[in-house]
Image (cartoon, rainbow, N blue to C red; front, side, top):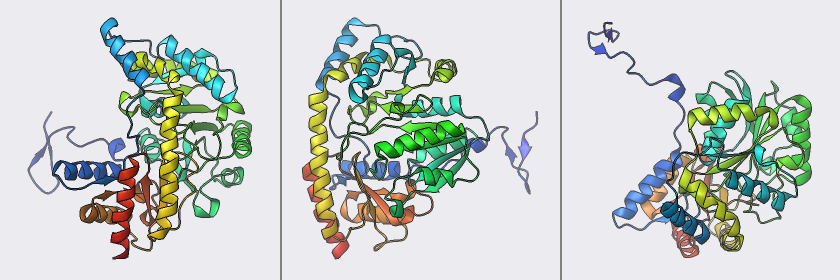
Amino acid sequence: MHPAVRPGGSDPVAAGSAPSRRSGVSPFYVMEIFGAAEARRAAGLPVYNLAAGQPSTPAPGAVRAAATAALKSDKIGYTAALGIPPLREAIAEHTRDWYGIDVPRRNVVVTTGSSGGFLTSFLAAFDVGDVVAMARPGYPAYRNILASLGCVVSEFECGPGMNFVPSVATLEALDPRPDGIILASPANPTGAMIGTDALAQIVFWCADRGVRLISDELYHGISYVGPAPTAWQFGREPIVVNSFSKYFSMTGWRLGWLLVPDELLDAVDRLAGNYAICPPALSQLAAVAAFQAYPELDQNVQRYRNNRGLLLNALPAIGLSRLAPADGAFYIYADVSDYTDDSLAWVRRVLLETGVALAPGLDFDTVAGNRFARLSFAGDTGEIEQAVEVLGRYLTR
């Protein structure tokens, strides 16, 4: 086979040198900001990191002890594709304890982080060309994973006028009617939560119309207006995605789970075995102990609650008064349009000139995100206080 020739010239192009069209998804800009903040810190410059979407606390002590014991006693080899039985049973028990619903162990699938859970869910539930709707603002990986799989992403506005919460009326207005819908509660980046009655109506609406609901419940356990309901309280048609990363403070352990409807179990099993073989074995063995750590984890949530109160009080005083509800998760989504109409350039400039790292709204909203920035309050309280002081001087100078 002869190499191709570039148009207008004789310089050969190696066959297969171009990246695939499916890889042409948008970057996750917050990772650029995060990297720049760490480079700044390594250079000895001050950094106040409000961009990180992860807890600043380590995994619970019981998890770390279980990991140490497993390293001494287990070969850490492959496990079953859907996860080790003790962990699947522990997740089923956790679901029964938190929500009062019976979940058979067979419907619990352990995944390589929630990212692996989304990938497996989308592959099992949707075909190339299927239309999947998601709220805007919303987590960008939904959009990018779906696009890379050949699905058509339909974004619907879910902004300040709706208090950042979708409703059945929102879904009824979608044209064309989608094959699937992704909803998150509490949501990233807004922290908005869907109430029990509203979630029930959405689950029923999807079931009646044959629309597959993917319910992102990653931030369950981190809420400030009462516990978040699960979609499985109202039906077993949705796929529920959850994770050990947020409430359980285990981001780098790369472990999540799904609640999978019976009709998709075989598909998920086959896909999981081919794509990942199994979730990380050491993380699985250690995570069984996570469900012994509620008191320690609830202390983390109390710190988030205090940090949230700090920001909700302090941000209006420095000129950021238009804020999303922050009912759950550990984010404040702030309207910064008084200072910029380009949130990405603005957060780059804020980091360069002050050391305060923020996430640009452009990551989460392709239309109005240029007017917003996300602030994480999962970090150290002292660092957050310093960040507000420094940012306030910058905004009012």
